[in-house]
Image (cartoon, rainbow, N blue to C red; front, side, top):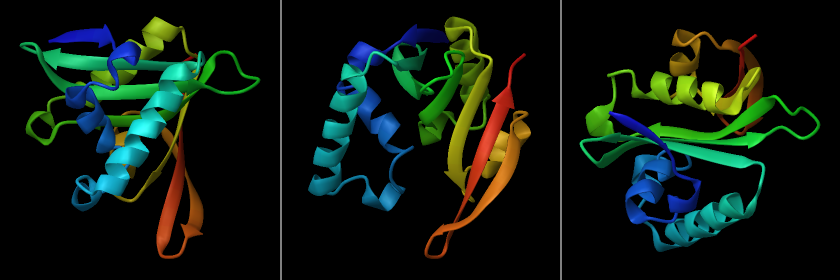
Length: 150
């Protein structure tokens, strides 16, 4: 397994498809509107000097991606824009390795992520403090997950 800086590669189909798992439900991944929206979002992220991205490669195949943005006014704090692992590679600690690699590479003191019921378990299992934000959208409970690294 190899962990690489992939910010300049995010527009590549193999990485963009993985990142899409962190932005859309699987049933929404294939619509043209969402594909175009995702391409615009990736272009915005690539243009932002405060965004960082890392990928996990297994035998040369992209297996996971993490994208982070430096929190405004907090130089050692990063908001997780997205983290995703291809379904075939899930359950083998890749997400945790991506978080650890990003933390070391960035010298981060804190990571924050906002998520839903589907992913909050990942954050709990990996040491994040979880705070409910309540029903942020109709019928959708959101959570703020914070990992202090100091």
